[in-house]
Length: 223
Ligand SMILES: O=C(CO)[C@@H](O)[C@H](O)COP(=O)(O)O
Ligand SMILES: [Fe+2]
Image 1 (tube, protein in one colour):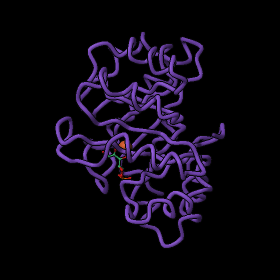
Image 2 (cartoon, protein in one colour):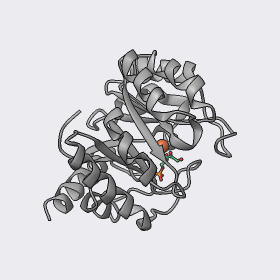
Image 3 (tube, protein in one colour):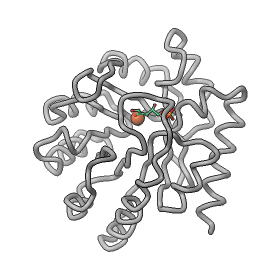
C-alpha cells in the first residue's frame, strides 16, 4: 500500500452477488475493507472467515479486515491465518489487546485496534507500539451510510501526537461517513487511511470517486 493517503473501499456497500467483479473494479484503491459483523457485538450480521477467504482469493488488492465481533481474543487469529494484510479488532471486544496484537503480528498480519465512538483513546496510548494501525470509528459500528462524526477528531490528534512521541509509523484509519466533504476534516486531524463504503460503491464512476477522495485527503494534509 502507498505511503500517501490510503483509500480502502468497504465491500459492505458492494454487490455481494458479484463480489469478484466488485473487488476487481476497485483495483486503483490501496486495499479492500472487509466488515465482519456477528449480530452480537453489533446489531447486524455479514459473514465469517469462509467469505473472507473467498474474497482474499480473488482480490487484486490487499484485504483490510474489520472485525466487529465479540470475543476477539478467540476469533481474530483465525482471520490473520487466512493471509490477509491487516486484522482490526475492537478494543471493547478483547480482554488483552496488546497480547492479541502480538499474536496477530506473530502470524504475519498487521495488527490494528478499533475504537467505538464512545471509547476513550487515553487508556490505549501506551500500547501503541504493539500496533500497526488504529481505527477511529466515525460512526457507531454496524451499518454503512451513516453521518460522519466530526467530534471524533480530537482522538486522531491524540493518537498522532502519541505515535510521534513513541517514534512509530502508526497508520491512523477512519471509518464511517467518509466522502468528499468529510475526508479533508479527518486528514487534517491526522488520519492517513480512509475507509469509504457508500461514497465509492455508490458512485457512478468508481475510479473517479477513489481519485477524488485521494486528492481531497492530500490537499487537506498539505495545510
Ligand atoms: O465498519 C463499518 C460500519 O460499521 C464501515 O466500514 C462501513 O461500511 C462504512 O460505510 P460508509 O459509512 O462509508 O457508507
Ligand atoms: Fe468497517
